[in-house]
Length: 340
Image (tube, rainbow, N blue to C red; front, side):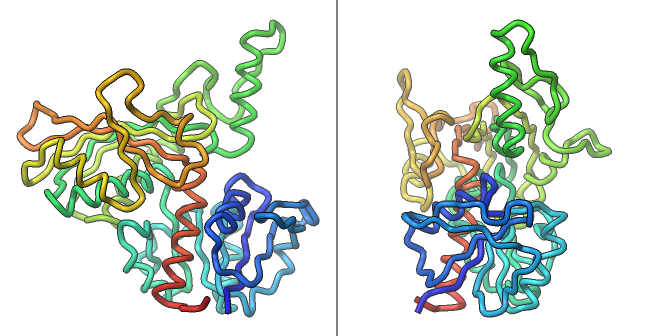
């Protein structure tokens, strides 16, 4: 006997990826329904070899469903997630709405799978921010070995993290650079994104950081260890899919780059591609469609006693969103619901 699963926001980039990944990983589902807003009613979406027609989220009864994977943003989630949870359906939410709620577990299955057990307080589990998800997968095994004291991270985040309109804006602005009279003014972003980088993701806070940077700090502490100090600079780059991060860590105990490389090679969810030669590293273009988070450029930081630098790349629509949500569903099934 398998699960009954609802994918909420099935017509969006992340919702479609959720359906793809459920099929690819052969998630033990007896029934999968695709839900969307009324304006998308009847839109066809792919689920493996099947084609599903979306149903109206507003009229849907979650009673009898085991899990609902939400990919609809915080405002809509605030309305529909409590309804699903009250009907006995466990909500796995990709928005930021519940991430910092002490009664809602924030889970990356390679890092803190045991946190799933706390779902019952609200019948909700939160998926972390895309930039945090890939980073903590790499931090956890190193922290277990050497104790991470401090993290300095700079991100290079693709436009797909902002949704379809941002992808269109990059595409149209890029064409406009080459075609006189077809220039496209910024709409999604405050400045031109084509052939540019923007050190600004989400709103600015009083201390000068952005909310995206704050998320990486708060979520790393909740998922890995509250004692880790984190400072982040988050940058939007003209890449369609795939986030990259330059990460510097300071550890309690000395850890050389060879041992760190071996630890990361053995860690779940990671793939190390680290050759000190031209092209001996992974870039965002190469990670698209892959389940793994890729680690390259592992090297000592000679400016401090116990420091390492490395490069981290992942498909943000997968590990940063849809894949992590499906992995949470798998973990929930194994640890708690135990069907299939």
